[in-house]
Structure formats: structure tokens, C-alpha cells
Image (cartoon, rainbow, N blue to C red):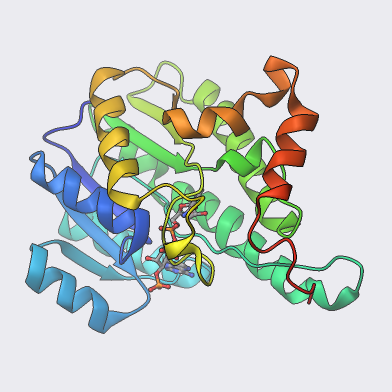
Length: 256
Ligand SMILES: NC(=O)c1ccc[n+]([C@@H]2O[C@H](COP(=O)([O-])OP(=O)(O)OC[C@H]3O[C@@H](n4cnc5c(N)ncnc54)[C@H](OP(=O)(O)O)[C@@H]3O)[C@@H](O)[C@H]2O)c1
């Protein structure tokens, strides 16, 4: 992906990784449109940063269709889609009470990106140079005990990215998978101050540098994610899983 001169839509860019990426991309000469559920937060971001904004709830198919059409109409040059919105919740699969959380996680983390890509696929292929930046996780490759559905949704995003990259072969659309390690954001309670998680600015700086130095990369992997990403390939998967879950600050929390 060329990291300048694009028009980038980031649904799920009102805070965390999405917002940090939005500010970096804007600073590098890209037009950025941020999407989220909170209209007041979007207005504040527009006033502070000059982003384009659109209200979107990526768990709602109608909202995705409406907001995507609005983005394409207001910003017809849009050529990069970053389906960033995601949720992560602890679950206890030993009781059936996990089900509502599991359904919400699948709806936002898997159906959300699928529906967004469906809404943009024609438009992106009409652009001379377009990119879909999917967002998976190191947990797509090594499981965190307390978040089964989250881990599974991110594994689904990894395999979707691998698969649709094949389908978009020979078109103007590239597929790049961002594979974050644990990063200090508000994704889960206390996660923004978790000493085991990577500081947000450090993470996004490394991402920008990788996007620039590896314009043809299929995956954007900061150094810190390689422990989780390559356990199976290295042959130390069991150790990775044991270590990941031993250092998980939520591991001792009572299961809900
Ligand atoms: N932080 C990590 O450790 C980590 C690691 C690997 C992958 N990731 C992935 O990175 C992405 C961003 O996460 P983050 O860490 O930056 O979390 P975050 O700080 O909680 O930000 C999540 C963003 O998604 C938006 N969002 C959530 N549900 C939405 C919905 N239904 N409709 C529209 N927007 C929605 C939120 O906006 P509102 O709630 O205000 O609407 C917010 O802007 C997620 O896909 C996450 O799975 C994060």
C-alpha cells in the first residue's frame, strides 16, 4: 500500500488504534474519514483534526449500507477501507450465559467487516489503486483463555483476508492484514494501562514504518506480535499458549 495520497475510510476510528492510525495517515497526506456510533465524538474529532466523519454502527446491516453509500457519495475518491471496529469481551463457556456476548462479538468483528467489504467492493474495484486493510490480532494465532469468541473472530478475519486476496488478484484491490499484538487501548477494561500491552503510539509508529517500507506486504506485523503469530511455525506453540495465559492479567478473574 502506498501510504500517501489516499482517501481512507476507518469505521471504528473514534479512539484507540483507529484514531491513532487516522491521525498518522492524515499527517502523511491522506484524506481520512472516520466512522463511529457516537455523533458527538465524531463532531469533536472533525473540529480537532478536520477528519470527514460519518455515523455508523457496524453491528447493524442497514447502518452499514447507509453510511457506506454516504461515504462514497461525499468522498467518491475513497480508495482505502479499514474495517477497524471491534469488541472484545471475557466469556465463560462452562455456562450458557456466554451466548449473548459471543453473538455480539461475531456480529461486530466478523459480519461487520464482511458487510463493509460488500458495500465497498464495486467502488473499490472502480478505483485505479485500492486497498482493504483488515484488522485481525495475534490472538488469531494463539488463544487467550478468557476470550474464545474474540480469538475465533480474529482467526476468521485472517482466513478471510488470505482468501479474498486470492479473489482480488488481478484487480486494482490489494488486501493487507494488520495483525496487532496486545496494544494499550480501551478494548477491554484496564487494557489501556496493562503493562504487558504495547503503548499505542509506539505500535502505530511501527505500523506506519512497516506500511512504508513494505508496500507489498500481505500482513503488517510489528516485532511484538511475532511471538504469537509464529508459535506453530517455530514449533513452540504450546509454550506460547502457556506463556500467554500465564501472563494474562485477567486470567485469575472469576469467570462470568
Ligand atoms: N488493542 C488491542 O490489544 C488489539 C489487539 C489486536 C487487535 N485489535 C483490534 O483493533 C481494532 C481496534 O481496537 P482498539 O484496541 O482500538 O479498541 P477501542 O479503543 O475499544 O476502539 C474500538 C473502536 O471501534 C468502535 N466500535 C466498536 N463497536 C462499533 C460498532 N458497532 N460500530 C461502530 N464502531 C464501533 C469504537 O467506537 P464506539 O464504541 O465509540 O462506537 C472505537 O472507535 C479492533 O478490531 C480490535 O479487535 C486490538
